[in-house]
Figure 1 (cartoon, helix red, strand yellow):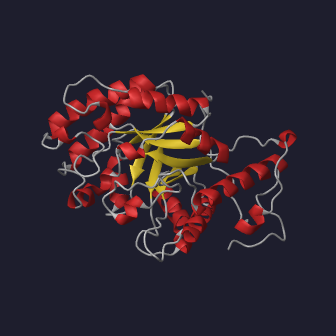
Figure 2: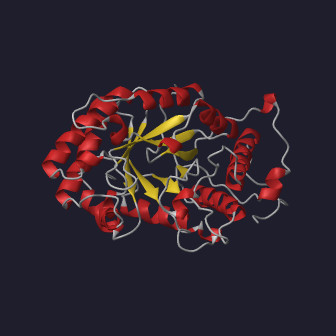
Length: 363
């Protein structure tokens, strides 16, 4: 496995332009670039639908274009489908083994509370009161971190628990626990990481910038032990304009300020291609501009949602977030991602900024 790393703010990427990228010369073996300190990530496995399962060939494809991180929901539902059943880690054992083989680091997400539609936590948790839920969560979290501490260096806590009301209203969470129980859920997950992983392990607080997110961050300050904020932000989810991507940069700066200067990684963002106006070309443009905005704002990396399209999702837009089709055909966004990563690594190899005078402007 790759050695443990710190997560410094990356340097800025200036606009390159997809046309200029496409014309860039290929690197020779003698010009092999240094490894990027920017997390070029993809949300590889989220909701445990069978059609979302990925395999060794998928990890090989990711590594081929330069993706160096994946995020994986270590689905409680998949690990413990029935209460008190023996834990089944078989799928994640295989997945993390493939990631290690291709030198891709894993951001493991713990304890997402989705337990109705798109369930990530087991449905048998729906009727548990706060104390019973915490007891079961503690067993799952400790067993999971203990098993994968030697393979996972970064851990995400829950899944946007600060917008539980939104999830409840959309039939994703069965109930809304009081704030003190929500805080204890986060404390339970963080404590499992601190107990079983090394001091260098990174604990990431997942955050959606909705519903008074500032108050949420202030509430957990001093209560929950975490290192980094994982921002879930989809500025184009309502409007179809890919040019909204620069708002990511503004949000990174705002979140870092409220979180007392902690690093910020974009843990989820994307542009779906459902409907006539949301084209693959716009998805590709969003990918490029989102990377640029994240890097220029000092974000430590970006994870695009999602690797695969999925016909099992309930909503049209959820089916079409993928950068790759279910048949493993790359969409324009995947190709744009490959070009952006190649340009950054080429610039690092040359010891130069990611653009030169006279190159084309971003389309």
